[in-house]
Image 1: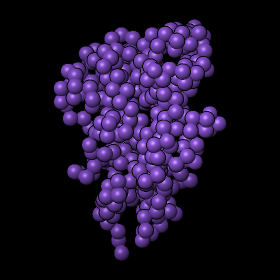
Image 2 (image 1 turned 90 degrees about the vertical axis):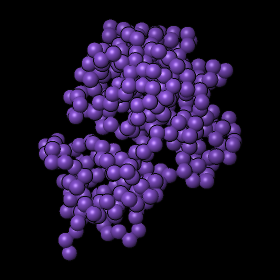
Image 3 (image 1 turned 180 degrees about the horizontal axis):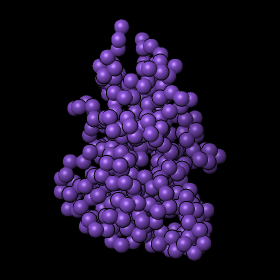
Length: 355
């Protein structure tokens, strides 16, 4: 019997939305797989996908133009609107000659920092008029969601022009007090770098860069933060120190010295977060939080970034928090199991001392 793949896709996506799974995978030789509480789970009573299944389901998600780009580039990122039920960030790619699809469910409602169980100290980032804020962490640990919460806080409390540059657009913002211009890579602009440079002629107050992927984007973002704009961006790094190393290592020689100087002046803070499984189900964020101060600025200029963890550990009165301290607090309050927390610690030996 011939399969109606559009109908089959709709049925599968309805299950993803109903179960509030974070991710959905379509892969040859596997049944439909969803991610719940960071665990991959097969959907029961579903057959294994064949190569034809994955191809037809992928094509059912794409427009003709997207199909052509995918076949040319062998991979593609885009967003998929599932009517009133929600939206998905979609990546379609080839593996071993077969088509696979990874979908990320994007909640329709942009939650507040409080609703996300994030520290209230992060609201401080929204009150600056210029500077550089970085939200970091491994893939699939809530960076985009935290970024959306910060942007929406500004949208609800300030009168600003916000420009976002994303690949693809994930959260859709309803304009409240702010003008919000959302630009999508390949649809509204050809590159992050070009879009960022164009913002200097578009009168923004706040700029959000979905991801800093290359040296040129990093350089332009830092310049924007130094020239009167509040810039938010994400990086796939595991700590504040690693984030600074990643930025500085993108440059060499005299240019690196210049970037050290710029970053020491423009950096507001860095959040490195993890989504950790709760004892009672679901996930909760654990965060390392760095705020720039004279000591941090001095370490960046003098190429002593390796000393920043010590600054974080000893600056609790300035609302800085190490990842270990954040994890320890979740354990002490009975939210997270100690063994799970240790798995997420970057320094388990030091973590144990805080329990």
